[in-house]
Amino acid sequence: MNIERPRTRIQKKNRQAILEAALEVFSTEGFRGATLDQIAQAAGLSKPNLLYYFPSKETIYTELLSTLLDKWLDPLRALHDTGDPVGDIVDYAMRKLQMSRDYPRESRLFANEIVQGAPRIFDQISGPLKDLVDEKSRLMRGWANDGKIADVDPHHLIFSIWATTQHYADFNVQVCAILDSDDGAHMDDAAAFLSTLYTRLLAP
Amino acid sequence: MNIERPRTRIQKKNRQAILEAALEVFSTEGFRGATLDQIAQAAGLSKPNLLYYFPSKETIYTELLSTLLDKWLDPLRALHDTGDPVGDIVDYAMRKLQMSRDYPRESRLFANEIVQGAPRIFDQISGPLKDLVDEKSRLMRGWANDGKIADVDPHHLIFSIWATTQHYADFNVQVCAILDSDDGAHMDDAAAFLSTLYTRLLAP
DNA sequence: GTCTATATTAAGATAGAC
DNA sequence: GTCTATCTTAATATAGAC
Image (cartoon, rainbow over all chains, first blue to last red):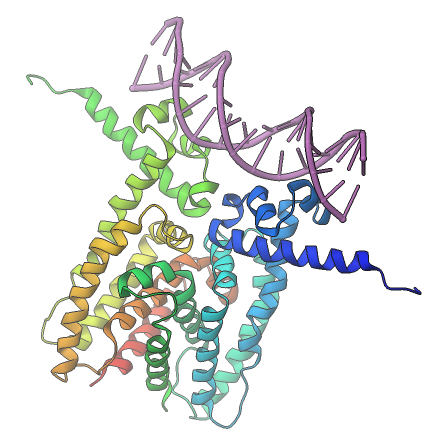
């Protein structure tokens, strides 16, 4: 307790390097497709050394998933009443689109997991995630009852915002191929389109 | 050439059983996650017998992908001018939603492939798929120029229709968990929501 | 904490009998 | 066409020296 422990600093640095490398590999290969060799190489460590920091491949993966889910839900948590409900919801969609632009690997990590049936994160989806969605759905329901936004199903509205924004991360290869566009060059067009889409839908 | 060849009938039946089993397994496990053991068992064949019909795991997978992509694009091909452009586009979205309801495994097969960078189907995306999308985008651009639909970016409109409809197949586990709903019980609500979404967007 | 070497499975694919 | 047996490789994980 008297002097600093440099070992801890090294540990933190290596753990971070591993999680960063694991995000890179898991997000493009999925859980089964990723190998510890790939992750170790990307992290600049040997495979046994990697397993010194995490007991198993599964542990790395689940730690990644649950850590990132929290960050992933920040935009939805931030949704609240500022006096302009339509603007609040459109802003939420824009923040989600920003997340897809800035953190596409996180988005693809979740996409891989959910598409394959959420075998390792189902509890967090049916628990905390569902609770948050239900809470924000009640908020939107209230706006609809007050005539502040159009009367649409809040759950399906949230699904559509997730789908349309995450599409630019999860299906990025397809989007770029069809638009003949580099990564992210089309994001301003996407923002304009989605802003129009949800503004017209929600106008009371 | 004189009498029928029962071997051919057996071959066709087994090939079909293998492709059906492979669709089931690949769509939930992804290419790397799926094993020939799983596919063989699901098809009711031994593993060597399976490899008598297809030379490799990769062959099964790519044959599935390219066969199904064709069927998958039928709704978009069917999009044409009937005199009611807004209705035509909404109908397209409804047909796509039907596909997600009726063929969720096909949707997840493609989702797995695209999310992971489309390593085995990229050529068909940047070729035939892009051509079809560009053609239908020109059609919609014409409608917008004639004032028959609102002036929105056709490519991003198509992306949003894909995203919102396929979401109900690809992220089905999450949708069901959040809605506390069984498979497909919410599809009518989804149809109503999406119909409203695109009708309001496109009204000139 | 990090390494080399290795144990242990699992999985794609083949050989060869029937 | 179908099977049993097997080859081969790759991948997770561990042992044990340093």
